[in-house]
Image 1: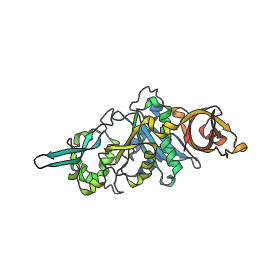
Image 2 (image 1 turned 90 degrees about the horizontal axis):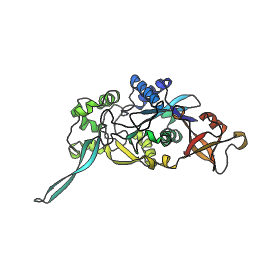
Image 3 (image 1 turned 60 degrees about the vertical axis):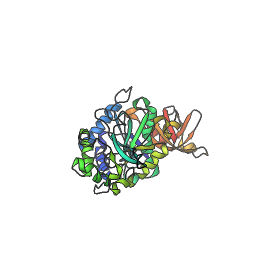
Image 4 (image 1 turned 180 degrees about the vertical axis):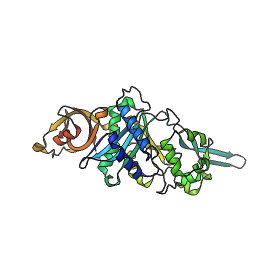
Length: 343
């Protein structure tokens, strides 16, 4: 069984391992001990702070395999990006070139450097150990964040976005970067990706071209990967699209991976989740094996005590009936306030 909880300093070695396993392309989760330690500290501060409006708070969660006690995954949220420095993306749009004299009318796709997502909440850094990439673990790790947003809506904006990793190989070769970014930064993709994760983003504004980049001027290889999801992130992409996220023509400035977005309230987990009381059903009496039983994501606790797990349960008028084992995992008792949604 798995449980999601906020990250703590004791999780640092496991988070380092996950960052190293994830490889290149996770700019917001670099394999750097000091930076990961800072992320844990930022998350703990955010969970200890009363927040009325979203700001620069970061929330970091871990997925624990309860059979071993090992941390096997991580995911995060940001209350709002682009507060200290703009959050840059490329917006894909058409530029019209026309000559009435020659009767030529061309629409040419171009990349416009923008910071349209500045001031918006972001889901980030979903990384799962390769031995635990099963549907239950992936859904729990991803959707636990959405139940957290549903419980604490004042901490997040009305729009939510996610950057998906773009095409690159294990050696750090990115076709998009080779055709564009390399010429302005003078370094390979691996180094630029790492610097973006561990240092200030000011260098991006200093070095990126300000004028539109006409897509046909890029190499064919680079054009082919614009908006394409890395093969190892395909399952994550499917989860997000199933939630209701959509691609609206924005891509990452480094690897051209797609950005997906949605109105927060329209996402399936947030829209369909329910809140109520935990109704404890002794396992010895029913084992919850009724025709009405189903697998649910069940969340309990407030901020630092937040916990989410999956369990067989039965929805009742007064709440959700869960067994004693699930009660113990969530550290709750009969009558505790919980949230739930079908897995």
